[in-house]
Image (cartoon, rainbow, N blue to C red; front, side, top):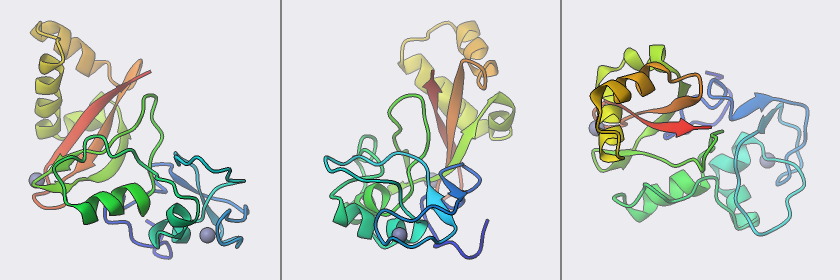
Amino acid sequence: MNPDLPVFRYHPDPIASGSVRESAETCACCHRATGWIYTATFYTAQEVSGSFCPWCIADGSAAERFDGEFMDSYGLAGVGEEILHEVTRRTPGFHAWQDPHWLVHCGDAAAFVGEVGYSELAAHPEALDQLRQELRLGGLHDAAQVDQFLTHLGESATAMLFRCTACGAHLAYADAS
Ligand SMILES: [Zn+2]
Ligand SMILES: [Zn+2]
């Protein structure tokens, strides 16, 4: 983690996840070249030329100025207004094939870790179990089919890995191309 970047409670290492990269680009909000630029989603009805520095994300100025959000509130139903606001308006989003969304655990938004394949996911059995259940609920009833899908994560589909900010458990959802 780069110690100079602002701290994002719900996205602790946006460089590792690829949502922020080193760049000479100027920020579309503060017009400074901070050396870092945001690369993932931002939803707004306004025209934005360029992207944002991590500081304009962290202090909410980019979301406020362009009346936009970095993340859809889908999935964040169980959390308080303040947490919802922090995730959607003051936290870097991430790259995904389908519309990205956030996961919730212990009544709080979880921290986004990154996009992973099967081998990384297998290091967190609780995330694997939870994903297995989710796939069954989603209509995959054949256990062999579920396992086949999971072991091929990283190829035609990937998993978005999160970590609970309260209990530390990992959780994930599947993202298909
Ligand atoms: Zn800025
Ligand atoms: Zn938890």
